[in-house]
Image (cartoon, rainbow, N blue to C red):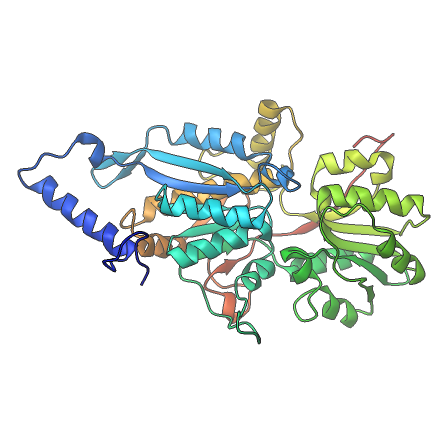
Length: 418
């Protein structure tokens, strides 16, 4: 049981909320008039993303999507006989996991949100979801492979293997490492190579999971006859990749893979070419999702490849406003004067799932009821169906994880332009 900060009476936060709701109901039905505003308390949604810092490209669509959501819900949401306004409180993680955890706690404790939405790599999703699970607040998470998301929250502080326990309040939808490995190896199989792969795995949630000897790239690539050259974890935002480049050159690596911050891949690729290392294939997650990353490479960005989660050509439409994937991408480009990127669709889908959950929640403000509504989701969104049905994930993750489609893509440039 969690006690309220600054209280010595031992009343839990949840009990206090329930008590407040009960006394409010008595006052509303007795001789004590309640002000109208109290009957229409806003439904509060917290949204955490990296608006600044090296992960900022993931959050480029946030303000556009928030404006769309506010327009769609400006009439409020009818709950019982009362129409209640919906308030979204956006918080910047600054691309820092510690900051993400702090702003998540602020949203929970100070703003008293009813639902948390979060996305954009394990460095954002994991600390936020951990806070939600601790504080017993319902949360929908996305935009991070499910293994780094799930495993990253299962650490055993006493040592030994993770407990693999399901979560009660946090739910995640995205693809998994098995999907991205399949996509990358299918692309590599179309080339004649020596099957030697150089790995760029940073010391963060993504890098540690992608390089994990049990759930990551190493065991799968070994079974398929690839030799993985992993020089070890490097620190994000490093300015010197000479050690990695030397290791790849010495091993005659003809393929490069990894999960790299956008500015880090620019640094690596330019240094690699300067040092005479140019592999036949480069398939890199995270960094190569964004047009700006490829533009930074100029003509040297030609033919590099990445995973593809969402495009304007995906055959899905929004459950909020009926827009097709293409219409959504076009609207984003018209409003922001930027080219669409893959997080556009998933940022929109988080609001889709959040609104659908709130519509079906039996009691707004009751985290267990909200979590139950998340678990029962069966929604067609602009990124595909979201339904926690346990398909395609191991038994320990079936309650909290559902998967979305994944394919591969290759960038084409002309005269240094996309």
